[in-house]
Image (tube, rainbow, N blue to C red; front, side):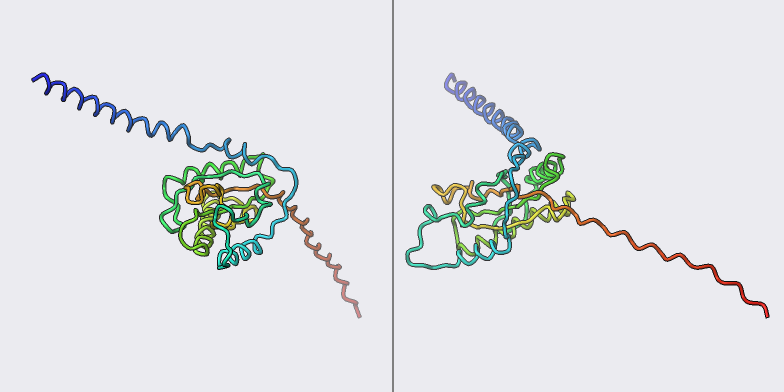
Length: 226
């Protein structure tokens, strides 16, 4: 009888611990949720404009991902495809996507919203940004480049279409596994993070030319009397 009582008590304690764990999980997530100020703190360090040819970088990344050299180094020793990007102010975001797609999972929309809040803050409003997609080192390298590009494009589309960020302020590029965030652990989830990088000041709009004033009509001459 006593053994049964102890067993029931132990089961009750286990149930209580399980319930507390379930309650603590949302609290832990709330404590680590991204805030607008987190994003601003990482990005608000402008020094000078960075000259980045995004179109050329896309092509270069895709071409390297397709290379099949005999002496190709392993992911851990592969040099970054764009080392200059590592010098830019950057915010690394954990954005959850559906498997092998650019579809953003609902739980990540809050993070994207916080990024949008930061980009429209007065301290970051004068600048342009580059959205950089990454993929961990699994599967084919060229497929990873294409998927990372689609995911970076998806975040740009959400920021522009849903949160109304000016399109001229945002560019996107996918680096696949050609610039791992943690090269020592090429298969680690951290290598799936997406980066927002501050690039340059928004180019000044050329002054609008005023429309030429309509020429004043000359008063009609009175008809001559004969």
